[in-house]
Length: 283
Ligand SMILES: Nc1ncnc2c1ncn2[C@@H]1O[C@H](COP(=O)(O)OP(=O)(O)OP(=O)(O)O)[C@@H](O)[C@H]1O
Ligand SMILES: O=P(O)(O)OC[C@H]1O[C@H](OP(=O)(O)OP(=O)(O)O)[C@H](O)[C@@H]1O
Ligand SMILES: [Mg+2]
Image (cartoon, rainbow, N blue to C red; front, side):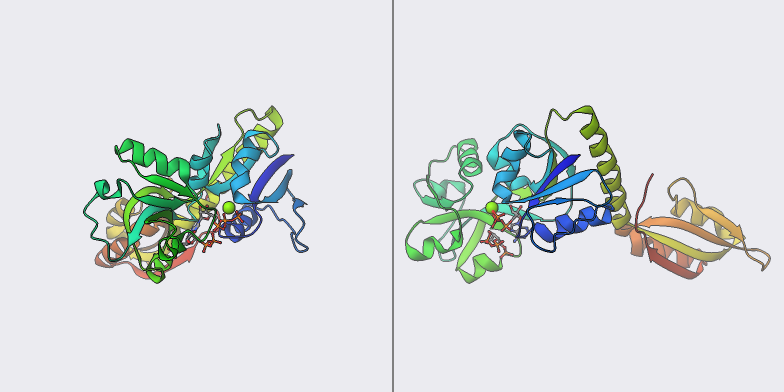
């Protein structure tokens, strides 16, 4: 039985549960139980404060956990990061009052900086030969300069709207972060196998999000051009149409190249192009 630690509530909760669901792991947490067995997978979920997850996984209280890289690196526990999950994207940044004439890192010398990320902030200061006074607070960090508690802050930023509403501006990015799956370094054989299975599913879900399934008709003399454009997972599927000289082509296309590929397909006389989402993709 693989014990999976996930955030009880907050920024990562919904997407963590959703990811497990897309992996076929259903957790009925309807009545807010903190420990829930999956119906159809040898796993059990523990719902915890995100700050505690690295410690619990390192201590084998849980075998794996879903948590932000920002927390993983701040806590400095000996863990394996086994997958980057692509959600919970944010950055850990230093921000100063909007009206400060900030020229560069050396302007931080001698300032009082409020943060919940003392380890990562100290590392940044040391690496950049800066000396500032770190003032640890556990939340509502952005309010600190406005109430005279500190001169600057170091906290998570995503859209920047919290900084904006508190009259602050972002001046240094310390870390780019996203949610990751971390694992205990000494899993037993049984749990290692379950984790392998879970990772296969996570990779299938992640890959599917990056690709679309594409179908079209094209004249046979363009097949070579189109196949070069759409290599597919192995190679495209080509089926002759009832109309002579025409074929139907099916393949996958990466989301990033999508519009460029469509434009070229039109040049290669493709018609009736259909694009559909993929639910899972296993290579
Ligand atoms: N604005 C944001 N946009 C995207 N991801 C974010 C944002 N803020 C935080 N995160 C990510 O989500 C994680 C959890 O954030 P949240 O604000 O829910 O934490 P918390 O208040 O410490 O929760 P807990 O009650 O579990 O301790 C953060 O550690 C970070 O990785
Ligand atoms: O750049 P933004 O999009 O404004 O996001 C940044 C804010 O989001 C997080 O807090 P959250 O809203 O999760 O609340 P919290 O204070 O309870 O952690 C983070 O601590 C910032 O305050
Ligand atoms: Mg927390």
